[in-house]
Image (tube, rainbow, N blue to C red; front, side, top):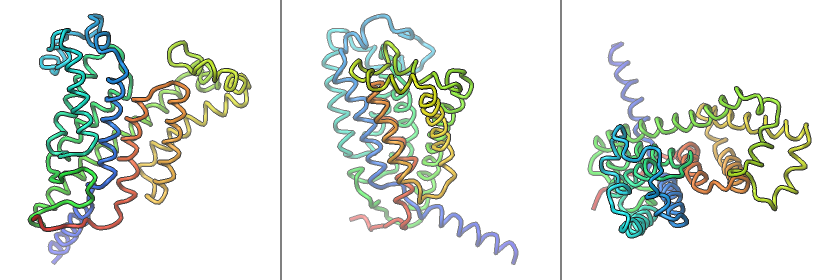
Length: 306
């Protein structure tokens, strides 16, 4: 009898775990954000300098497996512009949400090739490559025509459970990765004296490459040169990143407000540092981290496939 009770509890646990679906509008929005980030970088960058300058530190590095078939390294210089526009068209298709099962492989391939070939990359490009790779198992079992559809079509309930278990497991692995991103950022700052004493924002905001535009300096620098305000800004950033990292453990009812604050936080990074692709990468992972679960209270709607 005890064994039957245990099996019954286990069956209930599996049923509960598999009754939640991540295949909703916000998974699609996440993919669209990732595609837009890479697309904007390609559109507003000189491709011959970005990919064919000959000074990239890991060009022809055989240790990186993808460099054996990296499109940006394989094509001759004369065809790099045509290659760029073809890839931009593919990214537009991905951003529209058409056939995620088909486009997910292309999305990761483009992101990984860009990361390992582009001369000038930042954290957003690394995140995009990682997340598109982790999304592949989720999307290969996604039979929706558009990733904006909130309903998944399935023939039988057993197959539904298997798909849900696989997709939910990968989904929580991605959430752990997002948690680690913010935790690593916060913990890393705690080891830097300038962040602890409040002077780091001044240095970063006035960085010759990543710093703010000249028109902002008369507005922002008076705040950063005030010891109390600079200290508050510095510690507010670290505390907020710790809050975001710990959000993986808090109640879902707080997810929407945390998402809005986090999006505002990253919009400020665009304003100060001009990191557009980083914003879209973080907006994508924030959709996964907060919104998919927030709007996932209802049981999965299952429809018979026609």
